[in-house]
Length: 294
Ligand code: CP
Image (tube, rainbow, N blue to C red):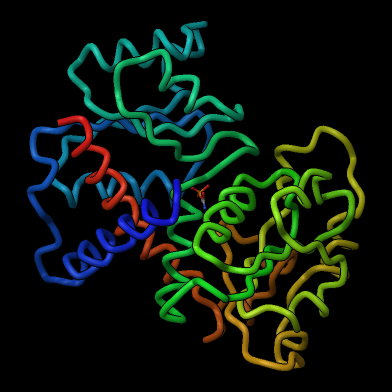
């Protein structure tokens, strides 16, 4: 997506956020559109947020959990989705453990496919809601300094955030242990810092990521205890900084590892605003995509 695509999504989300703050939160925009949410990986925020967004838009919704489906009997992804589409489903929201699963599917089936996270690759709607939340806090994303702290190597949130924030004119830094920063990161035009205090004193916004234990098949360095000592954000560090920064986290939080509770629940944290904005952003994405199919 380019900058004007993202700005269109934000303007559309602004309108839906107004709707979501009304006593009647529903609009008829996607009446007669049927959307399948197919999740091959666990999710709390993204799955519920997409489902709520669809219901607020008056779409018909079906939910598919891979663990209880015929995927376990060997059915392929394309066969699975074509069977769902044969039941007159119009759009598919998919989370999948493999990088590129969404784009692969979009080339092999006749439906709009929305990527709700593909392995360690991308999580586009998370990046949109993160940037939207920064815009809400500061009025604009351009010129803001954002540091993404943590397991950049295994994070789909990191890559999508970098691409989205750069399009909107933010300065982006990544901070973490060398073992968890991919070698290609410099080619994306971001700064790299291995010292948390220096990174936090540079930024306006710190997006704290968790260690993706489920995506690591080797014993990594540092250990969780070492990671917390070197890269964990606690209230003492937050209060010692030169300026009042904004703290973000895409969830799920591992309290006491990458962030302590007194930071996550502080007034500098916009973690629950991110979750709230996720519904408006996903309404905007679905609404704009549905318009393209008509
Ligand atoms: N932020 C995020 O993707 O959370 P879930 O895994 O709970 O959907």
